[in-house]
Figure 1: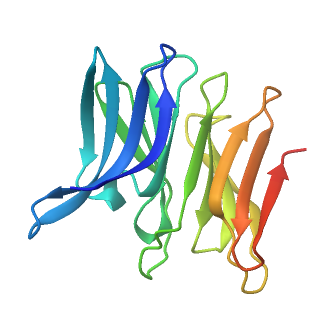
Figure 2: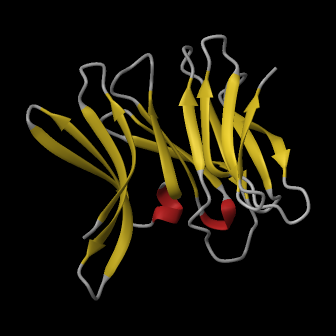
Length: 193
């Protein structure tokens, strides 16, 4: 099975955790799963989230660690119908929820991405491309335990936006998002004012 590394984080001890999508099974019967691989005590340990990437962690998942608890990993990805999926893994168990239920009925787009960050208070911030509404959206659980989301930028005309999407949270708590406008061939930086 060939692995496709998608995201890497380091623990406070400098040990790597790699999030990847991998083909599982034999040549004739295989499925695709998302695996978190952790390194500790000179050993690599995999954790399989499931064998259906759409249902479990989505296409092109993104990962970040918690600033409060080094064992917590937060993952976001785009699932079926362009839905946004969030998953938290505490080193033993994993919870998942659909943050935004999309309704896109076309084929999956391998370029759809979500990017995730956790602020100093442990709140989750996700930037993602909403294919249904052709927009870059932002989701957070900053104000409640449930996620709220808003549109950050909508595509104009036939522009294809939201590629190579990344989000970071500044020390002042402000959101910084960068993405590629594929049609016009430029990177755009969006900052919360």
